[in-house]
Amino acid sequence: MARPLDGIVVVDLTEYVAGPYGTMMLADMGAEILKVEPFEGDHWRRQQPVEGRESRYYIGVNRGKKSIALRLDTPEGREIVHDLVRTADVVVVNYRPGLAEKFGVDYDTLAAINPRLIYCAISAFGDRGPYSGRPGFDLLVQAMTGMMDFERKIDRGVPVGVSTFAPADLSTGMFSAYAIVSALFQRERTGVGQRIDTSLFASALAIQYRPLLSIEGLDAEKRAMILETVTAAREHHASYEDMLAFRTGMGLGRAVAKYYRVYQTADSLVCVACLNNRQRRNLRDALGVHDPMVDGAVYPNHPALTEDDHEEMMKNYERAFLTKTTAEWLAVFESVDVPCVPVLLNEEVFDHPQATENGLIMTLEHPVVGPIRQPVTPIRMSNAETGQRSAAPAFSANEREILQRLGYSDERIAALEAAGVVQPSSLEDR
Image (cartoon, rainbow, N blue to C red):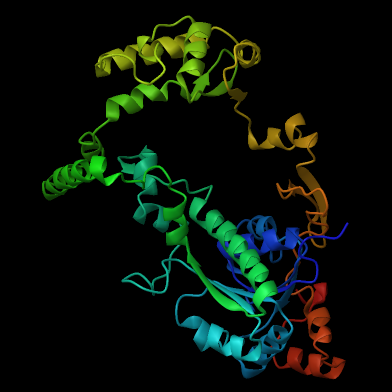
């Protein structure tokens, strides 16, 4: 079957995670991604290197693309990109504001070359405001959007982010792919291209549907009180952990936490997630412990308990879980409709039947490092093929192919290589 984005050509001028992840999503839908890298390569090629310029980080977010390395700080390099743009559908950049203009790949310049172009600009903090010109990465955005505070994971007295998961990066990539496909759909109706802007900061705000929802009639006064208290605490140089104690609703949070967490069993770990009182009662009864707060339909259904009460109940739950193995608890909970799963190691996921029977782990052949296994796109369609046939490209592996499609002769390509404008594509030169 055809793939949904067959025939769509994307010039990818992005590095690190957000942009590459978004363009990889487009590649999984059939778009041809021409990744333009600097001479030193995408910075992600230097994180956890495997061989030469190939790294685990780069391979993970660049499958299905073609790579050419060239110097955008030369007139000849900019001319190559402009030539690519003439017949491209999409350009994606993730420069700080001002750098795209410096390299001649800003929207106004490229839209003048191709008015039907969809141009997606990704930045850390957006193109306005006091942080607009600053560099930014996922962890910084987590800190500044309240995400880190909401998680309340503390190490050595200070909050830590979800640094290994990179929620701001990945959600920005997803939002950019969603926006690009939407803009392509609109172009089909209007014939007109457009500019898309998004940022890690905006995406990190957007995905916090719960902590950043304020019902002003209920929350504005409480928010003002918290801010007043925290401001006073900061003036007295209180620690972060001290300030957490000032927050309201902490007792309720502890009570709910019993039913939405990981427990140690007799042999490993099990995760339970009960989001209604029926499920909570089923868990409580299966464990044979006491918690009157879940007897009603609405939580909590009992006068507030003390911190000592919550602590004692938590210990009772933990002791109960230790009486059976994970497999035994999974069987018990399944029989009484308690949502639960085992906690798997990364290494266990590759061959877990839930992944393998759904075809969610694929094997691709990388031209330098050999076979690789990684997750497939999570999307299936009844009338279109999705997914990927090729691994991430080796550094500048498609240089000659990309230049030849522009009509460049072998002599001109050789001259550009000799002048240091483009990187040769042969493995020996890497």
